[in-house]
Amino acid sequence: MTAKGLTLTRHILLEQRAHPAATGELSTLLAQIGLAAKIVARAVSRAGLVDILGVTDEINVHGEEIKRLDEYANQTFINVFGHSGLVCTLVSEEMEKPRHLPENCAQGKYILFFDPLDGSSNIDVNGPIGTIFSIHHRMSGHQHETPKEWLRVGTDQVAAGYVVYGPGTILVYTAGAGVHGFTLDPTIGEFLLSHENIRIPARGKTYSINEGNSALWQPQTRTFVDYLKEPDAGTGRPYSSRYVGALVADFHRTLLHGGIFLYPGDIKKPQGKLRLLYEAAPLAFVVEQAGGRAGTGTERIMDIRPTDLHQRVPLLIGSSEDVAMAEAFAQSRTKPGPQMRK
Ligand code: P6P
Image (tube, rainbow, N blue to C red; front, side, top):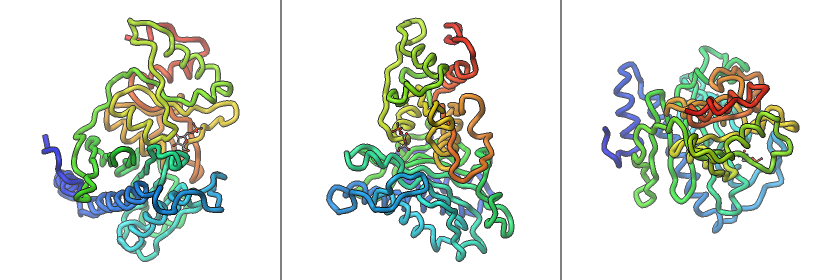
């Protein structure tokens, strides 16, 4: 058990020691993520004070107005990794195409996928928002200019995680050896170990889905959600509903307390709303490392090889038993009986 209060940098270096062949570049990259997160956290905490609120008149690739804080967060990652020598290519929700950093591509070993500010609709109401990141090794040679470089399967991830900007700023990451959380102490500007080796409960008591979309749900989604709402003490139902409207915040609660988050496909959005490469896949890596499960309803998120940079996927993620049950409903023509629950 490592001492609580260990800094993010020290923890990453201790993790690196477990890999004698490690060169330290991944450790440096993760520490740089921490730096970018601190810069964004400062802007988020002051958003109401400094005129960053409101929107630019630009529209991102998804037709969403880019709020200035989104743009600021995106530019922060570009600045932090621009001359790091670590990352050759950046893929961001806010950029239609991959951004190559030529000065890094000679020696940079990594490609960084990120959603710089997830849940930006919460910005103006002081709600929780977040950053999500996923790190892959680069393909060898000059393949970085080809789609092969960025259309990567989730199981190839080297590290992944997120930052939630809420009452506190918490950075959670995995490099394939468990999941660890760090809380920012703004008085010293350090992320300190606060959640070592996070394990998600095998099942929870909450479900998280936008009920406003229920008229559009597939029948199996409705049957599953109705099942969770049915009182049945023997199976711990009814579940409580929790929905913040910011993926990182809804996921962080699910990771710590258990339960299930769902953004399923529906009649209008068969592929759902969330993006594979920089939202679903990194969170799937984290949840699986914590003992949980993540799928589309029919396949494991980590096994999906993307065909498009900003590809969307349906997402069911959380406690292993809750997600397995949701998958049983999603694949069932009829409602599975209560034998589904232990
Ligand atoms: P809806 C935020 O815009 C986001 O991308 C995720 O953070 C969040 O989970 C989802 O969309 C919320 O979407 O349709 O429920 O407003």
